[in-house]
Image (cartoon, rainbow, N blue to C red; front, side, top):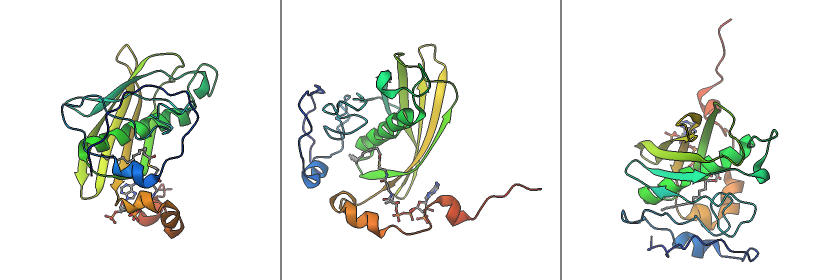
Length: 197
Ligand SMILES: CCCCCCCCCCCCCC(=O)SCCNC(=O)CCNC(=O)[C@H](O)C(C)(C)COP(=O)(O)OP(=O)(O)OC[C@H]1O[C@@H](n2cnc3c(N)ncnc32)[C@H](O)[C@@H]1OP(=O)(O)O
């Protein structure tokens, strides 16, 4: 992987520009430890792309434990009145997990994402999001995250399994999509879990 280009984190107002997946993926690199501000995955990423007007434009930094971000959801992300849509919260957490890859230095994608919505995430309210690597076993990255409000009250927790993939995963996405076959879930592989009568 090559050195990534510096990120100014400046929102762009122009519409989406076409970009080649090959160019994009080859710009990824391990972010050197002195780089506290991490670059967006790409300009139009739904979670962090500064050029995506529909996105969350997440700004993520790293610390000694993992990565973190300060973020507020707004009226674009409303579910129930005044409350962020659970899918919007999931989007942001999934993207936050994706920033840990800069510290791992591997390409990986979400295989499993689980979220506990402990309390409503309110619109126009500042939150702190944190994520860290819980463990790694081969190509499996077990990740954890929290969202807490300004009173240090945790409102959401999440766990994810990211699987390290080869660069071809991104260069030939249509081929990979058609290659998928059942079983598709971990439960399928383990067999159904039945409650005792
Ligand atoms: C510096 C670098 C930066 C890079 C940034 C990149 C961009 C980041 C952008 C970030 C944006 C945000 C992020 C995004 O939006 S990422 C986009 C959303 N995610 C995807 O599109 C991924 C789609 N899925 C796939 O392509 C395939 O399924 C992949 C490639 C992931 C795996 O297909 P593959 O056929 O290879 O593997 P497998 O399915 O047999 O499973 C493999 C292993 O995993 C185990 N397993 C499965 N489920 C569970 C479970 N629940 N608990 C515990 N274990 C579980 C399973 O038993 C097996 O174990 P084993 O039998 O091998 O021991």
